Image (cartoon, rainbow, N blue to C red; front, top):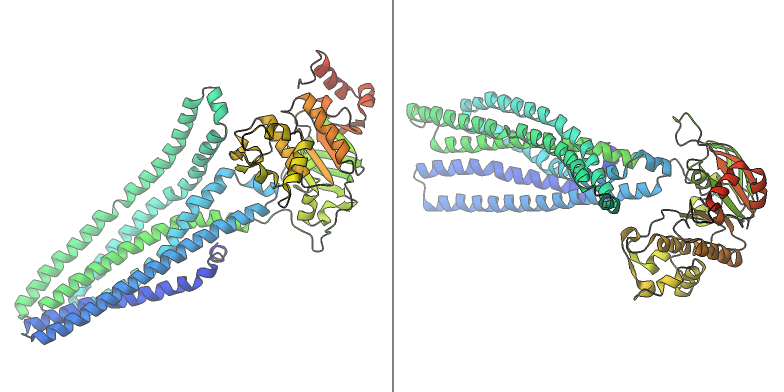
Length: 581
């Protein structure tokens, strides 16, 4: 885990090394100052001249300024390095997620990834800040102060040999009690974020079914779990303060009483006022350093859980990678399924697809129809290698998809999903996802093919109309037509429409299919649909059932020979309503 996270330090290594060095210099200055003050007090007590006081004062000012300077620089380098690490961690996680296959994405929930990139990274950032500064400063202060206590106070320094274990053991016990609660709370953060994400994404459904109160209760339960664990942990950590105060006041009582007794009985020969003041100062430094170490311990343990979660994402290898010598040219849009079987994970008991043999010629229009759960969408996801087959092979242009360069393959296979998303930005910006260098004329041509130009031109800003996140300010049919236009701009050899005209009326659906037959005849078109009207004019129609190909034929052939297709067609057309699903 540490090696994985350390890779993200990169350009901030120098600042990370500079921080401990600056902290060390700061500690040296701080440790010497009480010693000089004690010497100054003794000089004043002995009746020194003003010149001596001025010299000591000047030296103390210089050392204080140096200590402040080193501390300020350490704070700057520490903050920059820790923030830089957090920036790189988020960047590296996000970049790695972009390389994930669908199988990898299935492993992590969206809410969990959001928590890992926000809360977990923040915890690691805070821990790193404490490691390169506080975790260096506290032990050094402890060593210097403990040494100087014996130098200045002699036997009186033995009091710390009793107090330090008491304070150390107490702080460790407090930390150990709190740590399990901190570990547990991160998983509850995932649940909380999931509740928020689901509610915001489905807010229209929530309101239409008047389920606000239910969603509030669900959120309150998730937030309450986080609150309960955090409040319990904070209540345990609150014992740090009284334990610290008990040790501090015990030290002060002992030092003042024993020190005063020693000064009086020895008449200042064994111990003087300056030494007592120095011992008290060093004692406070020792106790504060122990307090800081306890907080570092708690923070690091919290961050270790976050670090493990981050490392899981960074170390996750995509299940789909480029071959050693990839093919960079897709000859044509032919598709061949040879003995294909598929399941989503190795641990799955049943195949989602079984014994699929299918051969599609380049330029053909293929319709795919079948009931819910018949694996229609799964079938086409194998073409662009969003998943790899479990058995058999899928070939595009006569080449196994596993032999292609991934970008090359996916640039030649355009998929329009039923729930395809639009991103926040103008219509032009969304369309150029299909081709970033597309001209305005090409945008308009693609939109005319998809019959999107007719409603775009009615917007006041036309193609510069701003689309809200997810396409919230356009209708379902408009969104689907924009997504089809976006796919057409890729000029793919294979165009897959996965129930992507379900929100479009049958007349417009027919017009879109007619335009595609006319203007992109060489492109292989695969149309997945629930309604038979969308696939009637296809060259061939594939009927899927239970993850297998039940039948293949034209509309007329299947009406005569296939019971499943005939039943679907009859149920949709018995009342003369081709829009029924």
